[in-house]
Every structure is written in C-alpha cells, then in structure tokens.
Image (cartoon, rainbow, N blue to C red; front, side, top):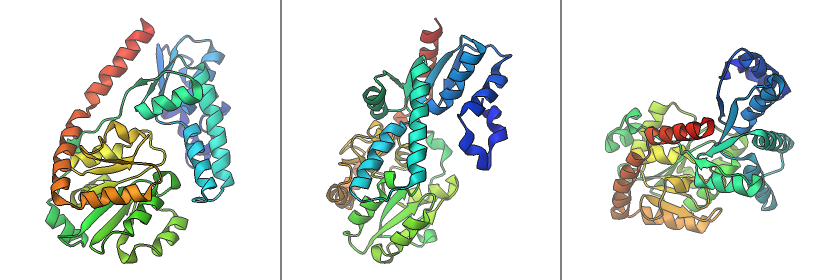
Length: 332
C-alpha cells in the first residue's frame, strides 16, 4: 500500500501524510473496493481518512499505534527541564505537526490496535480511546548464533570482560546518557558496546567518557548484530519512551538478560527479576544496581535461561490471530 508514496522519496519525505499524499492515496484507491484500510501509524491514517471523505467510500480505517508523538513530546519537555538535552526548533515543529496528524487520524478512524500495554495507556490518557493490544513478535530462527569465546576474540574482547550492549538510535529518548553515567561507575573489566545510528553531537560527548571502555560501533547489518548479541552479557536500553522495544525480544533469543525502564513497552517482554530488571526512568542508581546484579554469573545464567523461554512465547502467529479477530468483528 505504500507504492503511492514512491514519488515522494528522499528529500521529499517530509511531505508524507499531508494533503498531497492524501490526494495520491485517493487516486491510488479510487478504482478499488476494500473493506478495511489498516494503517500502521495515525499519520498514515491521515491519508486514508481524507481519501475516504473525498471518494465517499465506506471502508473502515484501523489505526495500529506503534507509539504516540504526544508521549514523546512530554518526555522531551522533561529532558529540557532537566537540561539533559537542548531545544531544537526542527524537533519541536516536527513533533507538533505529528501530534496534529495523530489527532486527526485518530479522530476519524474506526478502530484501534497498539503494540503494548504502555501504548494502550497513552492512547487512553491523551485521546480517550481503547486500543486492542497486538504486540510485535520475533522469530529466533532468523538469527545465527555464535560461539561466545570465539566471537569475543574475533571482536577484540577478553574472555572475562563484562560486556554491556546498547542497541538503538543514539538519541535522547533511548536513555543512553543515563546508562553511560551508571556504566562509568563499574569496574575496569566492564565494556559498553553501543550499536545504532550515530549522532555527531553525542559522539563528541562520548569521546570524553568511559576511559576507553566505551565502543561506539555505529549502524551495522543484522548478521553483524548477531555477533554482538552472542558476545554480550547483558542488553541495557533504559529508554524514556519505548512503545515496545523489539530489541529486547531479539536479545532474549540469545539468552541475554535485559535492563529496561518501567512504564514503557519493554514490560511486554521483560519481567522484573525473571529475564531481566526494570528500573525507574532516569535513575542512574537503579541502572548501576541492576548491572551489578548481572555481574554475578549465577544470576546471569538463571535469567539467561528465562530469557530464552520468554522468546519462545512471542510469536507472529499469535499476533496474526488477534488481527484477524479484530477484522472479523469490524466488518461483521
């Protein structure tokens, strides 16, 4: 369904889900008869609901919420107040525009799904809507597993290093600055590996941190990421806003205990004390305490076994069954 957007790629991406793309979608769908348009963001639903009004069609619009920009905006304001990030006009305008399109798409949609309990609560709080939870899933068979000692040697780490892995875009909402503050208080045998799209401003800040124990790898392909999952002892992504966090599910495939923030979508995957630890947002002390617990090999091995069990419970088949049930209820 995204083929109607092909004319607006690259630098024209900012025109997506505006009156221009709504007209393109209307042209795309005018000769077609659909019962349901399933939009994976409220912004994309903007195109679907405008086209429905223009063409006077009767299809139902379902919005699948992967997160709400209103929630991101609220966390951003908190970070500004704490002076942990700086004001950026482009970020401000982008979020404000997205919030408006979120509101418009949600206001005219017929039904809602979301990826986690956290997003369900946000939808109720900000828009007073009820959304059925259809979580993301993971297929562990897609990942190649590597021998831990061998892959550590290959990547340049010692056998007895305690390796903390962070995977995600290097942006304020992922909580990396809080992880770095906690990590710096760990012993010299600890290593922090950061995998994700780089940010130049953040890179300069990182250069002054960690006494050479922080490795900023940048963005890497999925097969290479499997090597770092295999080499690590723990995944720590203490996000301030995390609608679901597929990376936690991927880490569970490798038996990695995870550290994540309370009150986020990570709670769909991480059970505190079972396959990882949930910490208070922005709490350097709690992140440090969780990392110290996971330095204990016995604790780590117990949680590792549980992580693998959890990964088996997260299947696309279960999510697909939920979606089909929603479709049938909507058109019956």
